[in-house]
Image: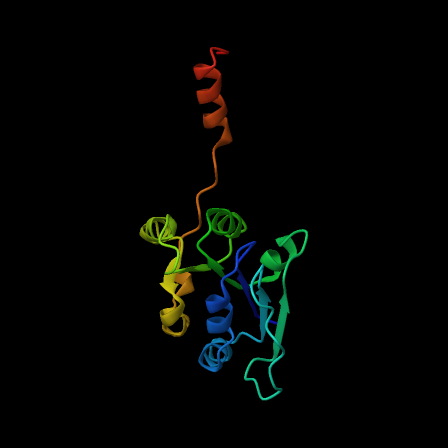
Length: 164
């Protein structure tokens, strides 16, 4: 069953949750072959179940879990707020990612989203353009996120600390 996972991590981003489960978004989800939508609402409002006339086969929602690893591993697509930790964890798991900027928090989010998009790793949008992004997305054009190189960082630290 093809699934999409939406996460806001430990924040409150009700607009993203509402946009992802709106009838046009659910229709876009279904038209792309996704049969399951999992929503992680964080500190925001936990969505109420929708009527059975929903075009999506299954919609699940929860606030928090000890780990999101299982949801990330089973997702075919992740839609996330633009938190650095959420973005990196998703990309390190090799999952296609749409990052959604919270226009009410003008902080580092736009810069992070633009850079990851320039690198070819993500698509990005805001809540008002999420459905358009879902309808036009070409996930096969996304590049894999390059693996980290902790040995370079360790070498740098050793040098700085005079241990090398």
